[in-house]
Length: 311
Image: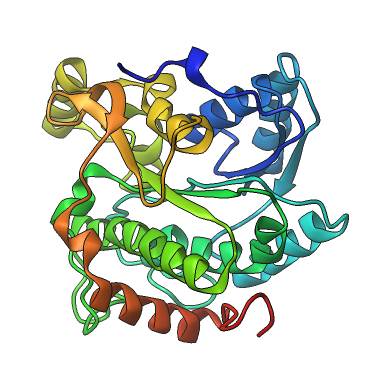
């Protein structure tokens, strides 16, 4: 039976953080969690859009909804966000690592010098989760949801060109970053099990959801490309609310297990009701996952605890 909004568990007394929550998928996820009773922190780069999103969500929210500025392309911004969210020491029950950038036409760098897709989509969330780990481990049964893409199945972690310095191909870099999201979930679950953090790491992808992801990355398409995209969307896409459902399932369904993966179940996983999917084979490679984890710690300077929650 397909997951529906009515299947969202009661989240009263729980606290959630959703990145990229000022619009698109993140907004829809945050709205649903808030309506189910969770206290929700909306995280995003644009304070004005964040304030508008917070006000809209608050009209149907049961508990507190707040906005905090977060730029995942800036480690300093991530550290500041972690400090603010950690001030009260309240546990985090749900972390949805959703924010992302897709295929800018030219190679760009984050403020810390990382290729912007790898830096934002993967390294930013790696650093964020590491910084919030004490609050996640303090929750009774915290979930960390990594939002990937169906195209992750075609990605490769190219350790010899991780930052696209040798060659930059927009979609290749995007696929790598989305595969990295899935490998991060795998590494996080394994370390949680080993160290007793008590986390459930799950992942999801939205299929072809009609959001501003393409425009925010590659730019608004024109000419024949625009016509092709519009035709594809008419056949094999769904709206942001539908695309958010697999993410909501991973975050708020009652029967989510470790390393479960959710996405649309029709039209080659592009649209349709959400359900459990089989992880791509490349996302189950422990050697690549471990190597990526080590490289990510070196690049970000964020070292996850090796024993319990003490460095």
